[in-house]
Image (cartoon, rainbow, N blue to C red; front, side, top):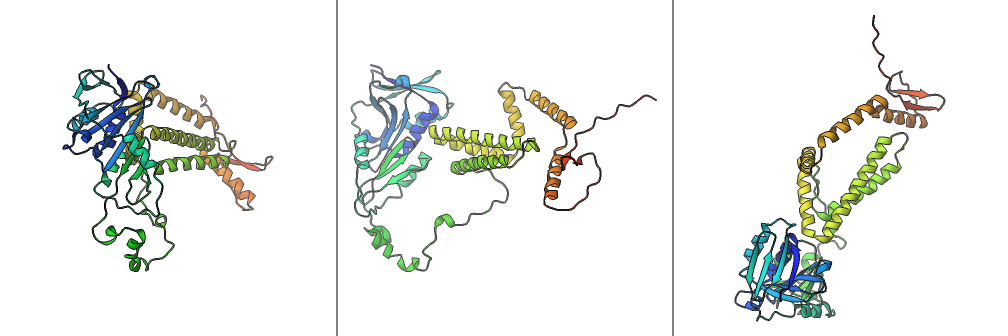
Length: 397
């Protein structure tokens, strides 16, 4: 009986990347590989070498849910070739993963397929039961486990912040992320200095003399940050999100403080900026929920583009590539500007009139010579910008 699921190349790459570093040694075949496990809701990639365990998941499409569960172990020797193959595909490429009656696992896209021989007789650990037991652990005393730093770099492949739960010195530490769960067994300690101590207090005592020279109310959040020599686009997703939300609030506040009647262009500029920041935040947040790694790549690429300052050229080229007509957009924009210049007061004159009114209301005395840009309206008792006067037609002599 053939069983199958469909996933795009980007999501499959994410599952494999997050678990590959946790595979067991080649000398123990049941753990030497990545287990693909399908239940009624998700496709999982799972790997463990008994020291660490990682499980990443992808939610199946509605049409593929509630089907018969199945699982296969991709042999560790095949994993590098499979990852390389998927890396070469466009992220949107759909891949159908299916089982066969002759003990093979098939990865097929619209152009080709990759067939992997699997051993159906291998018994993989009950990874759900392991993680369920770890998650149910209660905190014992004041946990102070020792973690082997050789294993810590494995978690960097997750490419997102992970929450941890520590319950006891000799029990596994639990990690939670977006569509990810994992665990790491503590080491037996040993070594020299604090690493050999079994309690926090005994390890802390070894540093009391040194730490006593410091203040008691210093927090790492208060550490100074270097000021950039120039404006640089942020590359951190959290910072980018914060800047976008702050931009929305700033633009909204500025719009409320700007007179729609007196400075309509400035009002619209604030509104457009706020709307753009809000849309960008919502899109980034949605992408980060679906795929944190893709969101980080977008933030990095955008930061490089912003730092280069060639946005206009890129926007023009991308518009043409997408089948739009940027030349018409440019012509329409220039026509609007020309019409505005011919029919409306100059923007600087509008702002000058506003400034003169503020000065008058503040009791500041000043004199303004007659000019074609601003004039005092005695009836309204305020300064106003003057609309351009059409040039007089030349008359024949």
